[in-house]
Length: 134
Image (cartoon, rainbow, N blue to C red; front, top):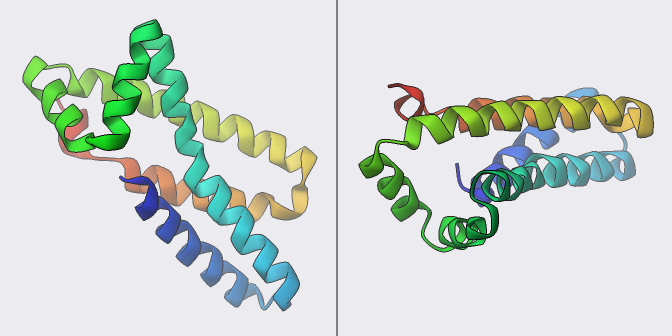
């Protein structure tokens, strides 16, 4: 899923959570901002993944993923390695999300509910079954 879609879904999820809990305007805006930031910027672990897998050549894949993400997916499909990268990236994504969520429970527990919820939605939206199958 593209970053702006994650931003939009995080905004919607955060807003629904704030509205359903009946939070005051200042607290609600803070929760929405935190939800959007965490729900979108968790994708920065893709940079870590690319650098771990490809080393210095990872920057080439990072640039291509930003500018032409569909071409990169097509390239990996043609090489027959898309499912391999999709599984490994999802494992790193899940580990990163779980770790940052656990840290949020101690560092800023008042926002951990919105962080956990946008992470869960982000992970669900990232699942592309066609990428993960062999």
